[in-house]
Length: 311
Ligand code: NCD
Image (tube, rainbow, N blue to C red; front, side):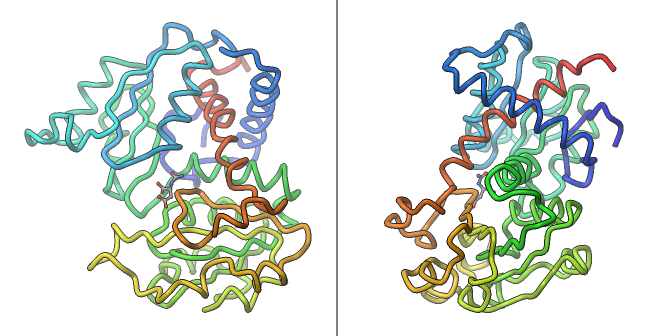
């Protein structure tokens, strides 16, 4: 990847030095937001970001919009492009992107097709940021996940990260696992057979995989980071992936008792029953804190894309 990233499509574009710079900038913005400075900056004043979401979103869209506004930029967009854009009149994604590129400086895109971000980037004259593409990738979520792990748990290469839940259709899992493999982390995967890692990803991750398991109980005592996910019911045929009652893939009091005292529990959210609300008070529950890091990470990303510092 060139040091000047044009589009953000996949985590495979990110080099360690680019990630380091992004995290440094994110930490700068995080501190500045913590000081309560309101609008943190005007570095992106007069710039316009389009958020184009064909699938539901709470955190990703609103943290991108907050990030842009906090940098002094402006936001246009539609939170339900499937219903409120010309997609209902038969317009292709490519045509919509070609037009919108003339209205703004960057497009943040969420779409149900795995190749949507690539297709958009192929026709766009402004940077495309993949904010979730089908069951493929969600690279900016992986950046904020890695940032949380590095700051809360420590260097990724020292971590044993256990992924739990829908490893087959969960795009956040696919992006983060790739990024962690690059960073030298060890990873275990816990899911029912019907939600196991896709074969191509298992091959790609190779030696970074410490094991695959059918129950969280098998590996909980060895986990430094536990990355929980919900079943992506909307992406499984028939609406369910046969996870049974989910008790092997969720936190129970018994599991929590066996967890390392300094383990970190993450979740991209939204959660279903896999993390009961009683666990929220536990000092190892970091998922809300993780979601909050989405704003400084996305501020850093928008800044680096739209206002790169001189070499
Ligand atoms: C995730 C997504 O959309 O892939 N949410 C998010 O962006 N934080 C996870 C999910 O929907 O389960």
